[in-house]
Length: 555
Ligand code: FAD
Ligand code: SIN
Image (tube, rainbow, N blue to C red; front, top):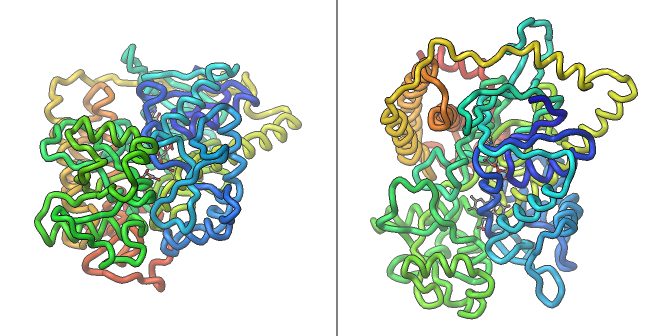
């Protein structure tokens, strides 16, 4: 396949960008499952943006910077906050129905926000956004969505039959067409990674099964700079189920908006505890609340804490949180009367592929947007409901950057032409799986996957220390080698490809966590409990070659 623009991923980052790029040329969106399946589809709380007269950009910027604990890039924060209202209007224009009160957008509140500023669609905001974007795309020329296409690796200079380029460029991807089981090469003028996060490296995650960090792993293998992977955000309140099916990949989220509306965290025995940890109590930023819950559970030996919604009132619960109400009722809990059992769960990958303010990576013609990136917006901890916003704003920047470049190219009448793309297509090696076999050893894959999740949850969770990280590092390194050897001998399929990416991303998280010998934001080290601005007021940037030299040093 040849296309002007190739977007990998059909969440908010990919779809909002597809709509814009379709004005400039042909757009192919490939996505590994059904087109709606994405983290976006499960977003509950909403999108943070300044629309109220009692709010202003300075306050939203201040809240974001405070939450990011010194590591946010102020320019990036400024950008998402000030461009936010325009992007929200675009969503409204294409028909996204946000909740309203007396004809005005209804504004929710979440942890770390000093004002009510979260626009939402009850407690199913992401589903409504996906619906609106997909229905607009269905009526738009120039965009094709390819479901059940799994991006395996980026095509770069090393995939060219003749190695003539000095500058590292991206030419598209190899993708597995899951329905035909064939690997295809897709060549594109510009390639955009919009593959979302990596919550699936942990046992308990609010992320759906697709969130296996494929974009970060692909980017790493291709030579992208990967930044701040140690900052994995744990959401304080996922639904706790004693008899949860251990094979189910996702836990149900109880939105922070519930606490914003007045719900209070309590121990199982009904005692409030957040006042011991932060003056904002149940609405402190997520790193503080998740650590407080972890601490309370460790002290009491309880399996969970509880969320008491009584203060919200029955009518409001049913009207504003219908999905959460229905889910809990299906599990035998009437949340208008009973407390919800909750535990923290892996939720958001703050780190990712490093981009500039135009969404460009360090590889020419390769861009990235959404949760797969590290743009500098979130720093050491993401402020609630800033991620949908970041994805919209940076996808728009990619469109503007590509559009500018296209104008220049048209003037010069060279790069990116159809003929040139055809030539590149024939210059790229076909996928070669000679010497590989279809294996029946699927038990190895499921065991490895389980082991990765166990290592990450036990040693690289909310509270970390050097001994645990070193143990995790040694085990992950062994598993990585094992999986690499297995991959070389085996014909690819989705399970194997995901396993290869999960182990790579886990490794990057552990490696990054080991570099940061301090506690900041989401990264809490028992043996380095304080912030160390002198040595660590900087991003942790990982590149393949640098990791290699670290391994050599350790051995
Ligand atoms: P996603 O929406 O995750 O989309 C990624 C896409 O890439 C998917 O289509 C996937 O199938 C595809 N893909 C991945 N790998 C491959 C591959 N190898 N080949 C082909 N396709 C691939 N944020 C907020 O701001 N507000 C909220 O209220 C909020 N609530 C949330 C609630 C939940 C339960 C969860 C899980 C997250 C929530 N978040 C929220 C975070 C937010 O939803 C995500 O950060 C955001 O949706 C990410 O969008 P994205 O487009 O970058 O990625
Ligand atoms: C939530 O609704 O609590 C999730 C919001 C977010 O992750 O930004």
